[in-house]
Amino acid sequence: MSAIVLTRRDALLGSAATALLLAQGKPGWTATSVVRPDIATPAGQTMVDLYALAIKAMQDPAINYPPQPQSWTFQAYMHAVPLNPFDPANSGGLAGAALKKRIDQIYGSPAAGTPQAAWKAAAQECWATCQHSSPYFTTWHRWYLHYFERICRKMSGHPEFALPYWNYASDNGPSLQLPAKFTAVSDDPNNPNVLFFDDRGLGFANGQADGDQNVAMNNGGFMPFSQSQYLPALNTKVIFPSDDSTNAAFDVASPAYLALGMTGRLECVPHDMVHVNVGGWMQNVPSAAGDPMFYMHHCQIDRLFASWEAQPGASYNFGNSANQPSENSFKNLKTGFFVDEDGKLHKEKLGGAIDTSALDYSYDKLVPAAAPVVVAAAAAAAASPLVVAAAEAQKFSVQGGGSTVTLAPAAAPAAAPAAAPAAAAAGSQTLVLRGIRLLRRPRAPLSVFVNLPKGTPPRLNDPYYVGTLNLFNFDSGTGGVMNHDDDPAHAGHDAAAVAQFDVSDVLRRQRAKGLWDGGAVTVTVSTIGADSSATPVTYVTIETISLVP
Ligand SMILES: [Cu+2]
Image (cartoon, rainbow, N blue to C red; front, side):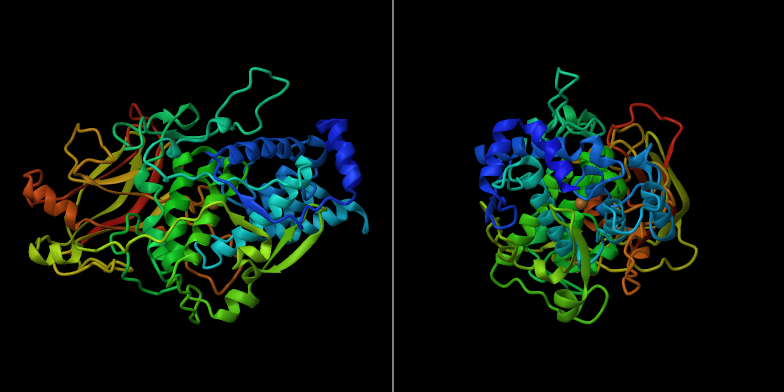
């Protein structure tokens, strides 16, 4: 198998590279200690060029059907396998018997001992095994990148290759745009830019995220800084708390993530929100790893995890539950399957990836520890209590162009938020959206507003904005939250169909400025200008929206 691949790659690289490889004997694909660079540096740009060489070789049709372990398709399917390959961005993911059936269709029944039998066996172990909304999110993805990087080294023919990271949110400007080499369109149809991916979403015209979110990410669109920033996650000193008070003012409050402490926060913002703001295939778990940008994004997430690990006082706070695993579970018991550059299958303890030096790599620069954020919200809420009656709406559906509902007084006492933000105090108000179902992905994220006046275009920075929905983990096939984790001990997925936002400050400010009379509250869910006119499409349905005093 590898002999065939080597021949094809050599043909792509030309004879000079072949001669070099032969002269080196067995190249040190794994022994090289590498430094992963910032994509914006000259070293990073060099690595992007090598990455393109690797992708070209990995996308060679000869190794993609049926997919050999070092092929682009195999690597993307390790993350997740789309149910509908013709509309992956809106497809659910395969699991269980359906996944097994798809693998049978792809590989057939190869004779034992053949290369194809080995590829099939590797697919059965590795495909659709990514860990999300899970305490193993960081270590699973670290192993995944490690083997992917080794495969890129061999496929590019460059043992010095190191994955570059997309250092978004390092400033409020260009770092929020896709790097230029990933958006350039080749004029030569015979030599396409393999880094370019046409199915990406919409961004803003600037890093402050003013105006509409309607500039193509492939045409210089910016992600909003507020949904890409990493400091709130890094400021969380404890990785596995069941409650955590260091970061109460958290923007996107999914109870499933809050229960996971630092790793949940990192996974939510920036990880998930960068996925949904890049859009296209990147916004959906089953298709995300098909966009070459995926691995640059995850390299940044891995670097942020390494930065957190290096901070003084960072603590694991091991426990004995699904969200707060024991030290033995985290370090030894939980395992995953990966394939190396020779197509060989490896079973790894996920905990073996806790230390980057054990995997022979480091980063050119880590994010230094930041001063802790001082939370003043609770004190402010107590100082000027706002009295609002419980109110709710049921069976809400979000259409293209956005939808609004006026909350009615709640008939029964509203259900309490599943996990109240730590700042919750007297006078705090929480908006809880329960039973969220995704029917169709919008071209840009859906945001939530309260008391937005009719005819006023929604803005990320307006006095009506309360937060943005995180739909990354939702399955538009079933509508619910994906359950691609086969671990029966991990049952946090249903909680993720809930979103909750602390609206105390927003309501208090609206009242002070005379933007709201203190009476009935309206809730609007809309993209921010991504739909120029109301189109007949339903994006999301929500069982209940409650305002909980
Ligand atoms: Cu991801």
